[in-house]
Amino acid sequence: MTYSTFEAPVAGGVLRGGRWRPEGRAAAVLLVHGVTAHHGSWFAVADAAPDLDLVAPDLRGRGGSRTLPGPAGMREHADDLARLLDHLGLDRVVVAGHSMGAFVSVVLADRHPDRVERLVLVDGGLPLDLPAGMATDDVIAAVLGPAVQRLSMVFPTREAYVDFWRAHPAFSGDVGPELAAYFDADLVEVPGGFASGVSIDRVREDTATQLDPDVLPPALERLRVPTTLLRAERGLFDQPEALYPPELARRWADRLPMLDVADVGDCNHYTILFDPRPAEIVARTIRAATTEAP
Image (cartoon, rainbow, N blue to C red; front, side, top):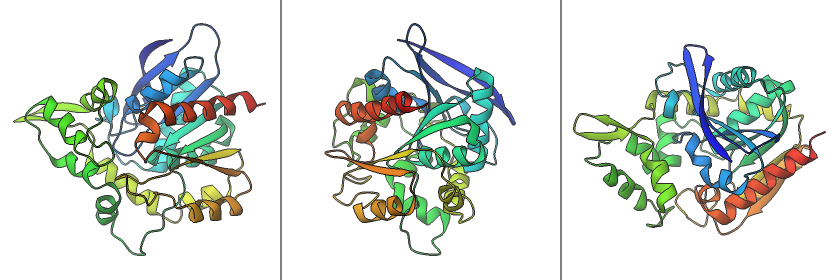
């Protein structure tokens, strides 16, 4: 498998990202990262799926696409991804999204149904049970906590930034070289040290559209492709309460005939993607989606 980067023209500039490809022909899969992540978050899945052609963009306001202007939101990201598929000459693909990337994937399948074969939603993509009327910034703080607090912080060294993540309860100090490299790739130099390159303005715009009742719920109601939700057993802070409690996931599965739910044990919202064992389950589910496609 070889890794390369790409650039694709989109509204307002260039969308960048990375691509893992085996030798010869392979099924193409579009991978969509979470709200404060970048395309490198899929490294463990790429390690577990060397037989697939994995296309992983940096969404508007993140990673190599950090300077792309707003507005952002689920619809804007979906349209960016459709343009990326055009640029790469990919007609119809399996799409896998983690966290917010799963929301984007659902909206992509709704806005551009001819481009999506199947969906794999990794601990994301369904509306959360939140108190009515919560302000966008309150939702961001309540759901993401330290992951978004870091966006306003300056770290004196690169190692200090990795140490910040080591202290996150989701990781409990267990940050290996590949995960450390992923965190390091998030950084940009600023006066006084280093900071995350994620745009807080794009995060706010994205969160607002996730909460918009006219964006995600109608897209789910119109879901017309086979979809699997991989539900992490534990939450964003490694707490026993999952981001998607079993009853919430079951309620949506009963409501949407195209949706199946599979539980992934012994992982949290982050480690479902980063730890080798759950990442292998994610890769296996994506691979099955490519082989079941007509």
